[in-house]
Image (cartoon, rainbow, N blue to C red; front, side, top):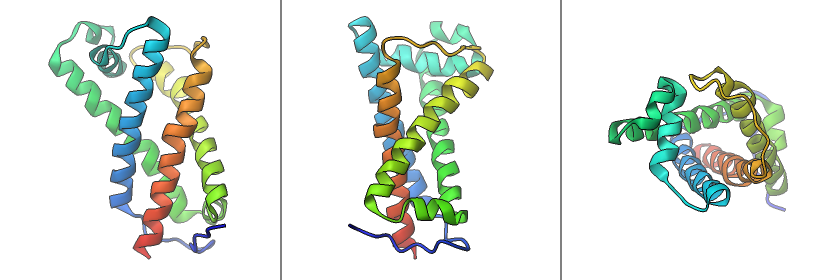
Length: 171
């Protein structure tokens, strides 16, 4: 079993380069997940449509008729949101001994990542989207289990592993 020797009390330096790295990784993986789920649901893939929907969270349904600028806004918002979730975990890892204890071994890192991915899915679907300009209430469809599992594996685990490795390197 591989151990990470981060102290369980006090705080450790926040690895900002790892936060950026994790943000780029999970933002990209999450877009791939969205394309895959869109393909499952509709039989086709349209990245611009996904990006317009993301932008609609800020500017409302009019974004769905937008062009390249709206899609660019969607890309930016998507990575900002990924960065926020990554930063939240980075701060918890830096300041909370219990989180460092939860990530002290590789199996614990994977389990913590799975849980963090589910927390992110819940936060987005139960809080962020209903409060957005879309006012999207949670809907549970045939793709919901795929989205939850996808967030656990493709978002949560990479955030945790990237940040723990970064914290270990920064010591």
